[in-house]
Length: 292
Image (tube, rainbow, N blue to C red):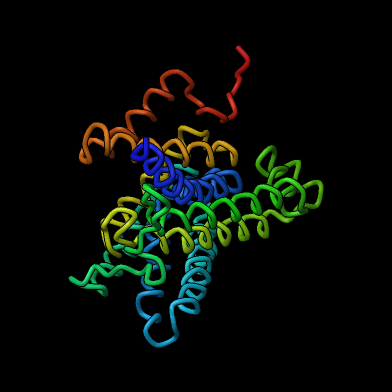
């Protein structure tokens, strides 16, 4: 029973991080209808800034700069590259983000070198003992931070002018423009928010507790596991992204313990495939109807 409770807390902690990343995929898709495959590289940019600055500025300030840096990098990608590819369709823009992802990832890996550092200094490798229950501190803090950020985001998305504008643009871009909604501003803030969430997520991902993968290709690969979370939840659903992240986190934690660690990554994609076969638009995604 204790083992199951430990796996539950650790899985929920991982799920909260995957939910933050999945929200990034969903926000950008809702604003632009583009799947951003460069999301993993935004994670690495945030982590690299923390790695470079934490010794000189302290971990907290470095973490803040890392989050802001990832947000600005996302905005830069949208303003400089995607915005200027005016004639490209959504599929071409998605392919463009793959190229951006490869370039940024290779550059960060080259700069970090063979160190593959961990960046969760204040909490990494410091388990919490509650009676017979041992919980990874990283996952426990990730669960709390993720819950707060997700709740704040969902409230903002539902009740703020930005959230209303975002939902209107996602529903009908032309009608939203006629209503005076500034599409460019909505798109820019969507990329900023998605980048910031990636900057937060890497603070927990590049740790020994989360996966044992330091800042490098391993963390980049883990970031892409959030894509199945967004898909199985429904790529146009913010609530689905949260549920998808939790499902992925629990699936990974439970399958690693009860089947094998190697199978845990495949299990995530297996769950995604099963969901897509039963419900192609995802658990909460919008089902497209066509008139015949």
